[in-house]
Figure 1: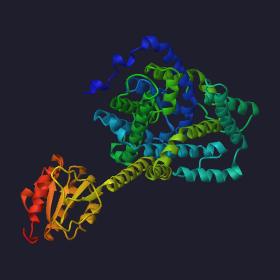
Figure 2 (figure 1 turned 135 degrees about the horizontal axis):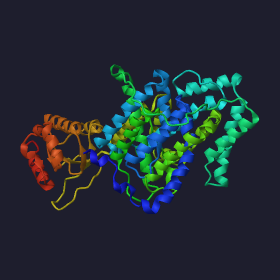
Figure 3 (figure 1 turned 180 degrees about the vertical axis):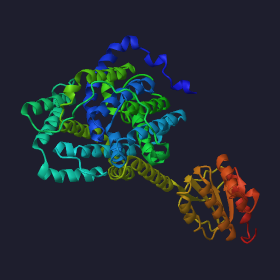
Figure 4 (figure 1 turned 90 degrees about the horizontal axis):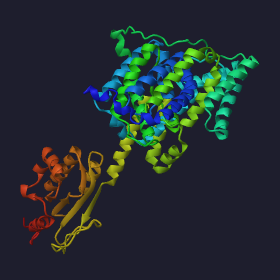
Length: 552
């Protein structure tokens, strides 16, 4: 069973003709990933070295074992949103345990073939989730952008407010100037020359200016000049339950973001789509291996994956080259990287956060329906106020409830005229009509009869009066659950007790099984009151109201 998750020769189909493009793309995305990896490591509190190590190790492992040929993995802003409160609560050493536990959970999800579950994630939830993450990433950069120490606290918005208040008396104008320089450079450079890595150019410019001007600003500091050797951590198994909820959050985020990035990549490049289950396996393995080298949890990175594809990548060699480029930086350029101001990295992430929000997608969701707009806003607010997993749970639950409400409202129950009907006539829906001559009413039930619509159904049919026979036509009923079937049984009982005969016409075979299972059919006055043909049902109804009207 595990063989399907292992690397195979087909992963590198076309490498002979694409290797130059793959190498160029790997170099390009490596340059783009460098400042982001450093910034995300600093933001978590683990340090720039942890971010760089994660990009190298997790990026290579996920490229080798993952299910996408062009996915680029590494530290991401969404993951920092989870890690910052985790480190504040349990300390940096908890990241190793949480990452390994989360990695095994994601591997298990891949083996259990849960990768396609993302297809059931509502679009408004995804957009609200992304919007909330972007807001948090932006707020996380406020202390470094203002040149003040990060205040204590777990809620990102509260910490950002404290930092802004502190900056009124202790802020650094030099740090603010560097942030402005980075933002302007990253905004202006793509308009002048799109091929240049704007984030790297902005960071280099900010570093040079800070060094030449002699500004007293916080910098990354010493980085290792080689990759750390792997080590097996001592895991306190008796305390694993303390970290389980955090591991579930990291695992869910790693799975969701990686599958989203792979799905986006599928739409950008011609070729076979990604294997979602194998992608989960590869990302899970990357999260197990990364902390052994001093790294942190990783996911597929949408922005870096997009850069990779646009630069010409077609095989996973490009993602592997990206890791090699970062290794060269560690071996050769660690001394220069150590002088990068933290404010410059804060500026890079602020721009990245703004670019994460697809304004046209948010606008499209808000303009679609009020329900979708509510789900988007609710998910975004919950992401900022609580945490990512709670936000997704709230968003999915709200989307499900609103969808059920719409389905319930779509259920229609219409009465139909049967007087003067010849056997060849079709009965169409019409206004409610009580037949004084024959006192027979046929109701056609359309749509869904489930727990969300059962009460509406009960309220409608309990108002039936001055009628001798009710025919319930069920062929157009699309959905029926146990609650709906039980409601149908309750209506049959109520009408029969009031002396009104109930006939059922044409329930679907699957619905018939449900009606039998809940005992609804047993409530009919006679087993012959179930019909497949409407003409036969009407003929039988007329036998109940044949003159005189009191005759049975």
